[in-house]
Amino acid sequence: MAQWRCRLCGFERYHRVAVLRSNGKRYETSFFACSGCSVMFLNDSTFNGLHVVVADVEAAPVVTPIGRRR
Image 1 (cartoon, rainbow, N blue to C red):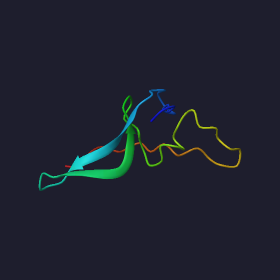
Image 2: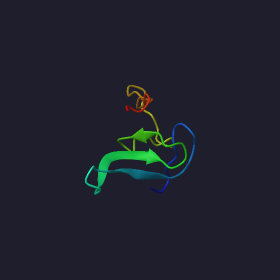
Image 3: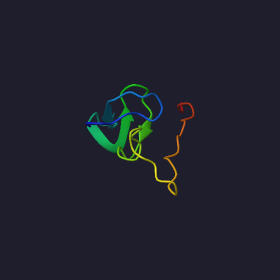
Image 4: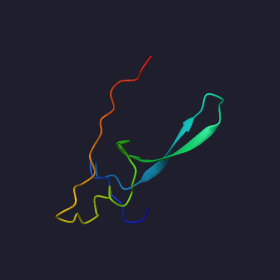
């Protein structure tokens, strides 16, 4: 995680997203999340705010979740 910065908030740490299954066991997903603003992303290299963006490559899209289902 050396030399990483969130593209949205500028925070310098992120973590792997884990969820609890219905049986109570912890499951690590393929997602990462910024420890500052909690935005989720799949690739820590391309979501790095310090990463140089090549002209013909788009930055990763930002996805805003809708509310929780009940």
